[in-house]
Length: 444
Ligand code: GLY
Ligand code: MN
Ligand code: MN
Image 1 (cartoon, protein in one colour):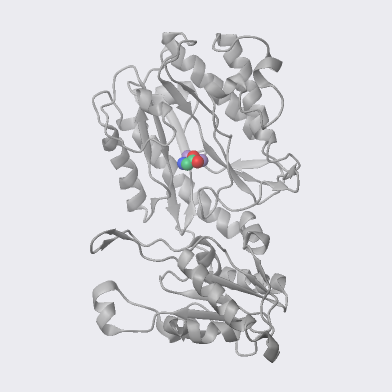
Image 2 (tube, helix red, strand yellow):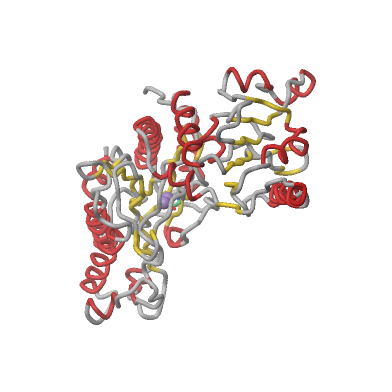
C-alpha cells in the first residue's frame, strides 16, 4: 500500500492561511506536546500536539510555534531545542535551530530557553493572542506572566494584548475541513484498520482471550507503521455493554457477541471503527434481530450524512429507526412519540436505557476532533470535506423490565464518513458489516 503523507507545501499553506486570518493586530501561540512520565525513568511514547503538528509538521517536544503577521524578521517563529550531541546520544536526534528553518520552513528560530526573553517582545503591539487557554496549566502561567509584564508598562506607551481568543475561532475551523491530502491519509488509516478488523473476524473463536484479539490489531497497525489512535476496546458478552471497556482480559465465550472498537492513527490522523460479531461465527436469533436493527439505523444515519443536512440529522434518523425497532421487538412499550419525546435535552427518553450516546463526532487529528457542532443555537450544516463517525449502538444490560433473552447483548457499528459534493464516502468500507458477509467470512 502507498503511504500517503501531508506534503510540506500543505503545512506552509496552512500557516499562510492562519497568518492571513489572524490579521495584523493578532498573534497566535501554539506550544508543542510534552513528554509524560509513565513510571520513574520511563516515558509514554511521544505524540505531538495536534494543533502544533497541523501547523508545523515538526515532531519534537519542548517547542513553541508563534505566528506574528507582518513581522519583518519572520512571521513564523519556532522556539525549539538546540542541537546537543550528548543529549542526542541518549534520546535521539534533534533538528536544532538551523534544522527547523531548512527542514520545517521556520522563518526565525530561537532556543526554547529564550522564551521568557523574547515572548514579551513578540506580544508587544498586538491586541489579541490566539491561544488554547486551559489546555496546559504551566504554559498558561507563563503566558499570563508575559502579558502582565507588558500591561504593567502601559503608561510607558507599550501596547499589550487585551484579548485571549481560543484557537477554535480560526485554527479549529480550518482543521474541520479536510483537504484531499488529509482525506488520503485518513482513508489509508481506515483501510489498515479495516484490514485488522477483518483479520479479527477471521481468527476469533471461543476460548480465545480478548487481549489475543487486541494483539491482531497491534500487529496490523505496527506493520503499517501506525499506532492505535485510542485504546483498543475488545469486549465480549457483557463487556460489550461497557462503553469504554479497555481491560481486554476476559475469555471469549461460545454464544456471545464480541464488540471491537479499534482504529489506527497515520501521520497523526485517526480512524475509528467498531464492528460487532458472534464469537462462534453465527448470530443467535436475538443477536441477529438487534444487530440488524443497529445496522439499519446506521445506514439510515449514513444516508443523512450529506451536504445540506445538519449535524443532528444522522443522529435523529438513527434514533428513530432504533426506537421503532425496539418497540417492535417488545423491548420498549407504548408508541413512537412517547418513546422519542421530542427535544435533545430530554434525558429521560425511554430509548436511552439502551442507547445512551450520540451517533457520532468529528474525526481528524483527534479522534473526537475539533470543530463546532453548533453555530449559535443551530446545529451546523454538513459540508464537503468534513469527516464524522456514524456509530449507533444498543447495549442491553440485565434489568427487570427486559426479557432475559436479550441480556448482555452489546452492539455498535461505527464507520468513518467523509462528506463529499455528491453525498458521502465511507472511508472504512473495506470491512464487512452485513450479517451474511460476517458469517461468510468467519466460516471461510
Ligand atoms: N473510539 C471512540 C469513539 O468511538 O468515540
Ligand atoms: Mn467514535
Ligand atoms: Mn470508536
